[in-house]
Length: 208
Image 1 (cartoon, rainbow, N blue to C red):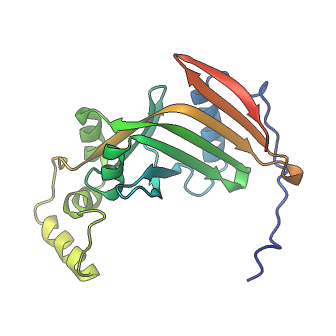
Image 2: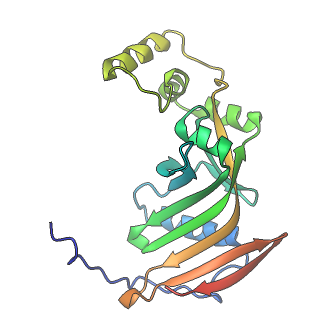
């Protein structure tokens, strides 16, 4: 494969300090709305990176389910690799990449479990099969086969869980940094950084 010859020029739009909102959550909401309006594939998918229990950085895709000025919420199995990693190292990063808009957003912050009422409410809103999967999957654990998993799932269907398992729930990521990246021509990309000091956000431009 000839990978070093792949090139793409980014010409969609520009990003400046003057054009960004003073509040990074408002700026995020604006960009997310534009991603939704553009009907891009999986606009709420975000890369979650954490330091795993062996000390390696580990990344995976999770889905953003809610956000406000407190932070960003996703749901998972607390006993999974990511859950164990967050318990040991709560400093995490999130990455949104919307290639159709030539944009990415990097967010650094600290993750903590959501209140149980938040997790309960979302669990009840999920389709029945998704609730069953959350209840029966020992996420990240080794299993003997696909058949083992499917048989476990079919058995659990007969007693469809209506109460959220204690091992499953939400995390809230409270940001301390945002970086909004807009691709530009000749690799002179626009990068706008928000840094939190106390209750205030300061805005800077980074070199590409």
